[in-house]
Image (cartoon, rainbow, N blue to C red; front, side):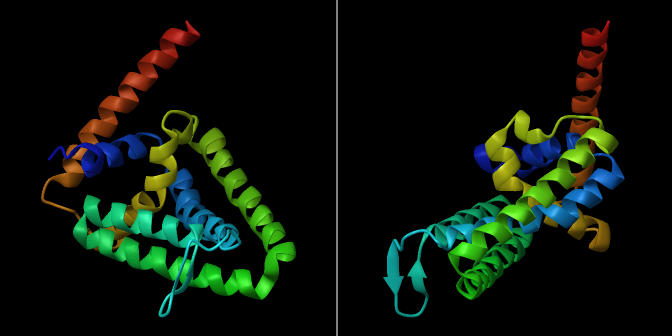
Length: 191
C-alpha cells in the first residue's frame, strides 16, 4: 500500500517505533493536540493573508490547519476526515482564544503550555520509552503527523479502527523490525 509521502503504514510504523511504552503513548495522547492547538493560537497573531466574507481573516493559523487537514484526509479518508474536523475546530477555538487573550497575554499562555507539553513528552521518551523522540530523526514527520497518529491510536484502542484490513498487523511487523534494528545499533554502540 505504498503511496509515497501519503504512505500511512510507513509513517505510522516510523512513529510507532518511537512510541511503544504505554505511559509514553498516554503522555502523547494528552499533549500532542494541545501543542497543535497552542501553536495555532500563536499563529493567529500573524498578519492576514486573505479576508473572506464567511471565514473572516485567513492567516498562518488557517494555512497550518488546512495543510494538516488535507494531509490527514489524503493519508486516510475516514480517520483523516475526523482529523481534519479536529484541525478546523482547533483553528476556530484558537481564533476565539487569541482574540480573548490578546497578543501580550496570548504568547505567554502559549509559551507556558508549550513548555509544559514538550517537557511531558521529553520525560515520556527519556523515562518511559528510553528512546530519543522521533523529531530528532524526522522533524517534519514528527510535527506534521503526530496529531494524526495520536488520533489513529485512540480510534484503534477504543473502536478497533483499521484504515484497511491488515493495517495494524503490517505496522506491528514494521515496528518490531525497526525496534530490533535500533536495539542492535544501541548494543553495538555500548560495546
